Picture (cartoon, rainbow, N blue to C red):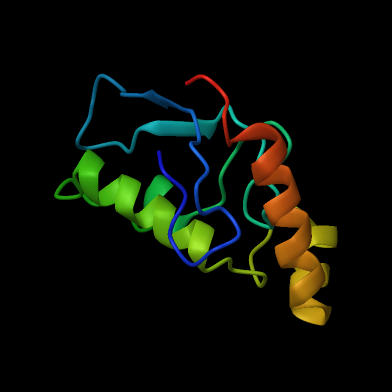
Length: 119
């Protein structure tokens, strides 16, 4: 997946694992980043904190969400982190306190792991 333009992930190519369950579309796919990402909603194992990846009542998955919708939502999450529901509290705090430092760290991680790497 391409990093969103205008974000610290721009120009990055991010590898994902998407595991489609047998009950899809009635259950959400399991999605993980393989490429390391510096982001408050993505942990070091690539797990993603996003309501669309969870079943109600805690999540927002509905069977009408397509894989394309899901990928667009992941790009939106990359461009617009949610520091109020983080997996990585230290990165969320950095985002809230010093967004320039966050952007620099996210850019550096993107350059190291997601630019020029084979997908």
